[in-house]
Length: 270
Image (cartoon, rainbow, N blue to C red; front, side, top):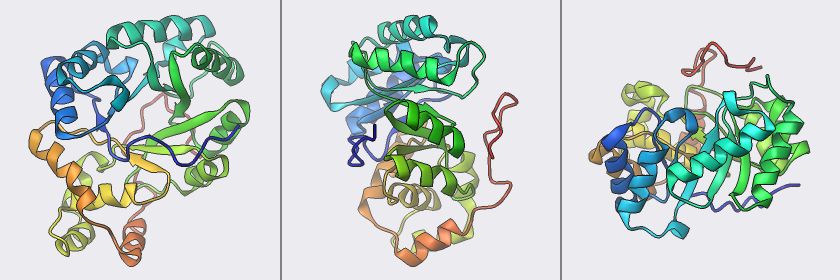
């Protein structure tokens, strides 16, 4: 069952990976007060309670916020999916999330079909508006989209990593793509091509990388920004556009060794 490509996911989000404690509470509150409306967390980040505190402290109405969390590998068994998601909601202080993701495609306790059936059950109960996956390569995403109403796939995506196969499947099934590590863990900051493109409009290489992502149909980005300066700079990507020729130049930066997130338990990316 395809979803509408006109996704309500805000194109730019605030990623909370590796942000803990009061830094997380403050970061979420400040991001929302600056104008972010897309907050991303996960059970594995061990900061859902702090994210929830930041949501409450911001004063921004819940219905204005797109909130995503993810179910970790150790809970990918039908009963555990339910109980762990209920625990996530308690920590976040909300009665539902907008998007619930399978964090990694590591299926040791149940089949993909059984896992997605449990996710659909949570959606039917109103505990999540949409369901999706994360780190799914193209072939597995194609399989998942034929089993359940997959709304989004969250994957590593930046100028150095070609995600054309995944994007092709996303567009086939009208699945949204959310880009994590959109700055390649800082590698884009000194890139001469990105700097040259940015110089035309007075923007940084990082802003160009983010603009390149969100300018692609059906793509959003969730950079982690640990300072107010960077949070504001990320939001400023709405101030400019990249020409078709320069979009192509950024695409051409992709390289075979471009992946920066490759944990030992990761699936075969082919």
